[in-house]
Length: 101
Image: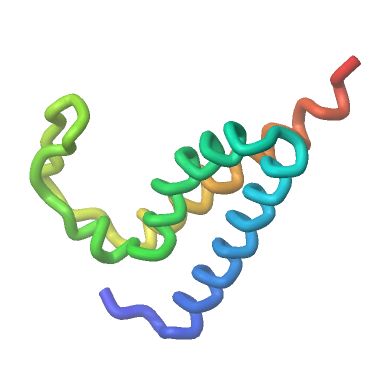
């Protein structure tokens, strides 16, 4: 599905800013090991945002667990789920951080 280039560029720009912010905070507060863990977490949602149409068009078997994907997914749904996963740490921190003792 073809989307306007401006919408794709905004999603890509904002996702780069969010990913960079996560990496900087990980480097400041946890060092190299935490940066590595954060980057591993960010790969899938970042790819879902940047390559949503290609990832949504995939059918076949997932490499982990041998699960079949029998139908294509709309690229916009893949992008939205990428954003949900990418922003989960922010929601988690904003939800639970005020209640820390």
